[in-house]
Picture 1 (tube, rainbow, N blue to C red):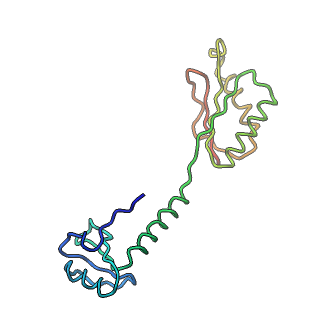
Picture 2 (cartoon, helix red, strand yellow):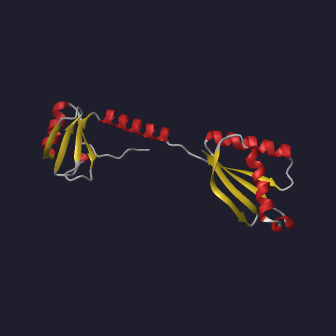
Picture 3 (cartoon, rainbow, N blue to C red):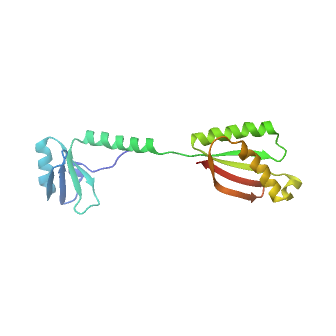
Length: 169
């Protein structure tokens, strides 16, 4: 992850809006004057915003600039939350104890902030059973879930059975 910025003699813009490390605005000055000012202060001239008109440059230590940028990226990365879609498969004849175990696992996943897809897997003749009966079978699992949840995607009928997606409230 290399941060690509132009420094000192890599900058090609004839005029720059120059700011110091302390935030003092030196105004719009030519590149040669900006480089001389940076050298006089013992720092580097770093192009901060190349797309601005005129481009914005900052007089500061390049190492400190890189450190600050990496720190910003790290903070932004730590604040992102990734949610996974976990899948539980249930059949019509799944026993009560197995349903309790699966519901417990679903509750744990919801507590972690993941979305959970519950599939009622249908084979053979069970695919053609009454839809209300099949939905009631799916509701059995939802009743056993201890965490609070909301339905992210309502019950849908697919080629392999019924599916519902739930997520943390």
